[in-house]
Length: 233
Image (cartoon, rainbow, N blue to C red; front, side, top):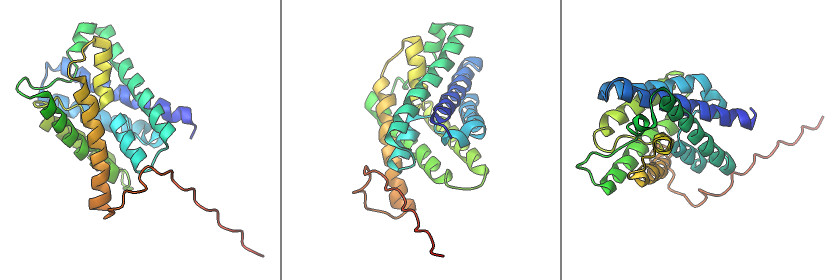
């Protein structure tokens, strides 16, 4: 698979996720159930469509966890981040074209007025950890139902998080309407929270699922597999 195909797949998948998810916020007037399922089903659509091309991250936090787990290289992680943001921004620009930039600003992830920014950061980290943990585990399964499981996990995250932190769990999802709509309130919550959550998810994977307490070689480059010596005739 060519690198440009992987990066294009990440842009496309993030475009679908942000377009359908934030579009549902506008189309339903903020209905919690509709928004939660819109994000979850949009993720499922992206995974079934281009998931095999790039791995179906559509989220910088997922790419960070995949890098930590040595599933992708460092340069791929950075390019994934770039194209994920590009895909999200294109989705927000599409909504702005159909409506206005001010309306796009209304789709920006926002904290409950009664929740402090730090608590919102903690909540985003926890939600992201649960979501990314599910992805790290389910992505290794062979059944196609694993993609539904990932989408339903994102739906559950939105049910639990919309009324508290806004349930971003995805820096690209929050950056897109922020860039297009010019709304950056508490943006650090939606950048730092998912990043911490991704690291936590990887740690939980190692400890709980794999029973591995050794993190000393976490950032060491993955050693290439040795080629088997040719058999003597």
